[in-house]
Image (cartoon, rainbow, N blue to C red; front, side):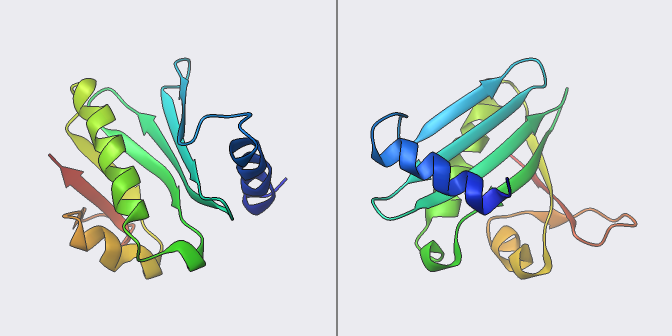
Length: 124
């Protein structure tokens, strides 16, 4: 199952009240938090945050193209930042795809100078 198929399935659960909306999953064994949010027509956001000892890694933040530029990703990211603050974590890192670099830069993420040009960090 690819990410789009999985998102359709989860959207169906949320709009049919079989799952909270937004829904937050916690996986204590691997320190992962996932947040999903649906509108009537589509799953509009999906994120996955992996906790480390002193920082978090944002493995995925996905908003379908037709739902972008509505503040949804920023809202989800702010919820994840609050999650980190509760755990006394003050840094989130992400490997951004080229088309998302400006989004992360506008939120205050800065490039980490490393071999990977798209690695960014946000400190709060």
